[in-house]
Length: 121
Image (cartoon, rainbow, N blue to C red):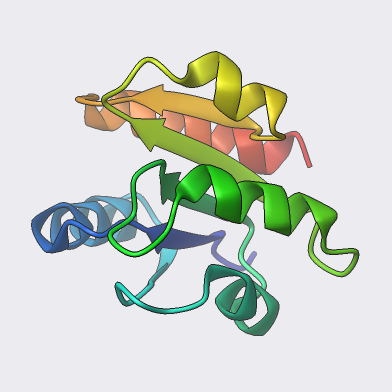
């Protein structure tokens, strides 16, 4: 069985390093975006099972990216879990997120919501 692939769209480099370590330990394949990379293009290239995306990215809004992703016919079905320290769960879900993870979160919460999103596909 192949590993589930998680695409990280997070602009905090420390957080990315921690997430990569944790997710790899849990058996996931992990791809991290660079700060200025086009999320939709990377999704098209990498074909992740789930995208873990911060609402507030350095050069773009995660909510705007989510909306564009849901409107793109070729990649609209990719699973997306949004994450933020702000109270934006309802907004994320209304725009098409498959899950929301409030920051700060515990590792087991992260793993649980990612596996739930992947298996609901």
